[in-house]
Image (tube, rainbow, N blue to C red; front, side, top):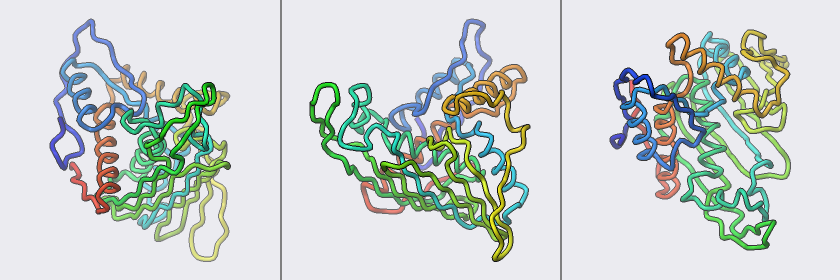
Length: 298
């Protein structure tokens, strides 16, 4: 189990036995940090390679922007502002299909915070190359009574469907975000630096980890935004793929390359532990009304 205040355990990798199988686990990895740490510890003890399905890290648009930032394109990044509407989330209104009713109970660990916000925050910290050092959050359940479409049963929801976050990254950049349900899809990310601004807006009306994004940038004062085109070398697989599955295919391909080359470029169970730790701190902040300070591993 991870110690309090850490971002997850660090365990030495051992050589897998010949009969061991590598493990891919979709996100969320577990219900909380403690469970995720146990899973990571077991996989490490078995010596298997492991991967967590945080496919935003395989998104060509996100990797392109990440490289621009690392090349000082915007200078020092001052703030990141996110407005995220999720009409595709099953609890967008007062009804839900039976297959997704489990999303209404927060004890199941699959909701607007863990899924929608989890993918978003992992992708943004990856893009920035910097973890959170402090965070404050508000979690609300706006749709409390949900009717199951097939049966008419009314379920009392307690899982959050509205998330508001304010935080600071280790780099000093400030992040402000609102994740909510809506009738209209909307995802807008503004990255503001000392030299200019990059705008990332939803292209496909999909979740953050899937969307191809329309990218624009402006440098200097009183200039017009110009489109940014993601270079072709950021695409591992052919682009003629369903956009929902495209970045998953990219992640699989990266993992296959890692196995062949013995490299470590894909998000693993330790990545999942660190994200679960961040989400646990968000929950704690919302429950206590206090700012949470995170210990960052060097």
